[in-house]
Length: 212
Image (cartoon, rainbow, N blue to C red; front, side):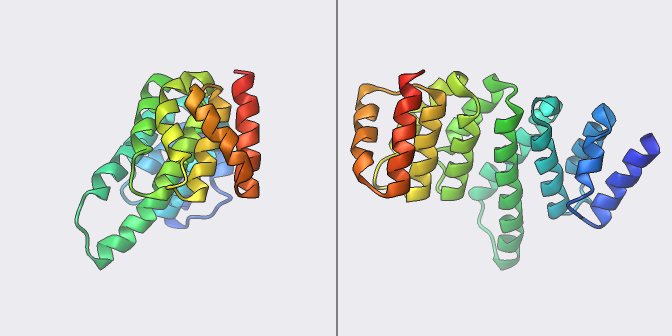
C-alpha cells in the first residue's frame, strides 16, 4: 500500500498526468499525505501541484489536514504580488497564480478551519487581480453564515465599477452566506435590471438572503 502511494506520488512529480491524483485519493490518510507531500516537494512541477490541489478539493472535508498548506500557497501569492519581476519571473508567476486559484477553489469545498480561512479570503477580496477576487469570493461562498464577516467587502465588489465576473462572484457569495445590509439588498434589487446573468445571480442572492 505504502509502496503504491509512493510510486504514484513519484509518477505525478515526474510526469504530471491528471489521472494520478485520483488513485491517490483512494488510499485514505496515506493518499492524503501523498497529495500534501507533492505540495511540499520543491521538485514537483506546478501542474502536478495543481492536480494535487484539485484532488484535495474533490475529497472535501476529508482534506482538512491540508488546509494549513493551502493557506501557505494563498499567502505566498500575496507576497509575490508586491514583488518587482522580470519576463522570466512573470511566466513563473503566471503558473503560480494558477496554483493559487486552485488553492482558493479547494478551501471552499473542504469547508474546514473557518476561523483561519475566512479572514484570509476576506483580505484577498481587496486584491488588485480580478481572478484573485473571484477565487476568494467563491471560496467564501462555501462557508455560509460562518463567512458573515465578509459581507461588507463582498457588497463593495457588487458595484458597477467592478468587472462583471467579479460582481457575479461577489453577488453569488452574498446569497450563499445569507446575510446583507439593507443598502446591499437595495443594490441587489437595482441589479435586476442589468445584464441577464448578473440579474439572475442577484435574484438568487436575494432569495438566499431572505432564507438566511
